[in-house]
Length: 404
Image (tube, rainbow, N blue to C red; front, top):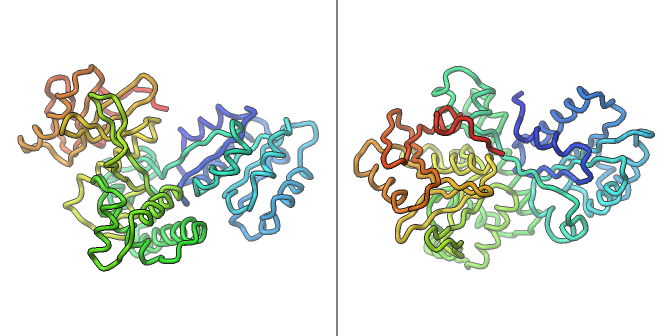
């Protein structure tokens, strides 16, 4: 088991703070394991087992607690007398009106509440109103390459080739049989599709939804719109509308299977309202649906870098410089970094295509080209970095940087 150090540190920093800690992320990304690791930390700090109440609502034994009054009374009857009680509620979205129980628990000074959820819908509507200002969201992703490499060990290039193929869902690192791996990822995909999207949003046309998913999976890193998806599917005989596509896209984002990157006009210093790109929570799911496509390696690489920047606490946008594009503008507080991502820039024409937009940016923020190339071709202060070095922070220009 690899320790999810970044997420664990956040929970440690928030321990005993009068705020509800909500860990969100796609199913099977490691949320339950994170709570277990934090509970181990509490015990190492002297917290007794009697001070910990941990409930996973996917377990049949907890089905009687899927009613918020029952949940509230169950916890209150088990509080440690005169001590802080740490309450862990895993997959809380399965409890209808759970926010009412959580709010009542929260106001007790001797209760420290931690929750996980697999759908952003749980943080909208009534919950956002009732618990406004009382919770902090910790957004969790599947394993980074650094975490994956720590888990599997060995040669880092072998680990990278495996990660590029399998993705970062923790359990896939231990699966050697491709058929079993496919079955495992299919289980995740189908659970998200049926439980977190179809059942919750009451979508009737599951086949159409899957067509949308395949289209988006096939177009990571490309500019798409709800109209473009609708027109494309209609041309294939699946007549639909932009409004329907927007509902499906929002549902995919709520289930944390899809992420939207908006566009930022670098010279105009403003965010644009159209021409977004979408990225997947894990490239293993893409391979599951679309198979191996070596010609798509550049977009897969782009997807991995995008997720890594999110892990490091950046707000990530697509950069626009006149009629040119920069893959990512990453911002955090006063910090800003520009990134181009390409499988290779050994071809001089490709190198010029990738570096030209970066040269058009006149500020002094760092600018990088991330590739799979072993050799580096730096120019005008713009540094080329191997993707493995970037993900492991082994390059002298990026190691030592403090990421959140």
